[in-house]
Length: 246
Image 1 (cartoon, one colour):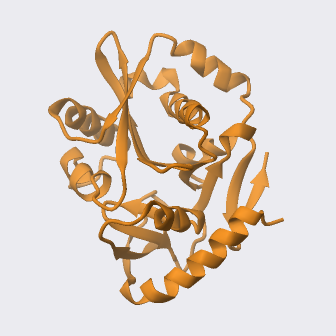
Image 2 (image 1 turned 90 degrees about the vertical axis):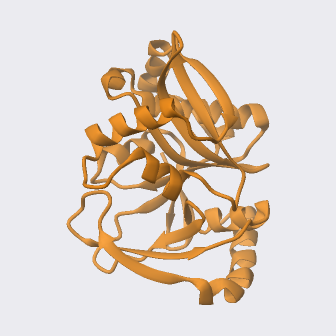
């Protein structure tokens, strides 16, 4: 059943999209998640948006890439499913509680989004290990993906004894947080830092009384994207509706 909030967002989004639709265009590239299909990004570049407009795009299943907002319109694949959490409803499982214990020594700091050598070096190591494609660089990710002028963005750094082991890029609104990207030290994979990052974002939402946490796409066939469904209850956007699972 569609909530009153989602019904209101859906109606408002339809009204604003009528004026914005002409700015959207589609590009086709190889699937960035390694699936054997052509990926179609339906996207538009924006100047600074109000917090409410960004919220409406997120509620409609859109994602941010730099100053672009996009949705996937792949002809032969529908694997990318928007996923979000409502932190006040979240109940941690045994593995998630274990992740917290394994990372008790991690220091967490929220700060303004910026570029420095330490984060570039860490992101490059992460990309080289996880996504070793040609021209895949931290500088490119920051310039083309992370940095933005259309919405307020921040980063959360994770350190152990002063050493940077992970950074989370997020967009922040008064009643929503959008998880843009998370990269971490490949040698620290046993810490389950992806899980710990989401738990940190949940705690941040609870502290700030934020109702919605957008986690990007759930892709069942891709382990780096499918683990998000371990956070319950979660909500998947299917047929233009947010449906509760778990």
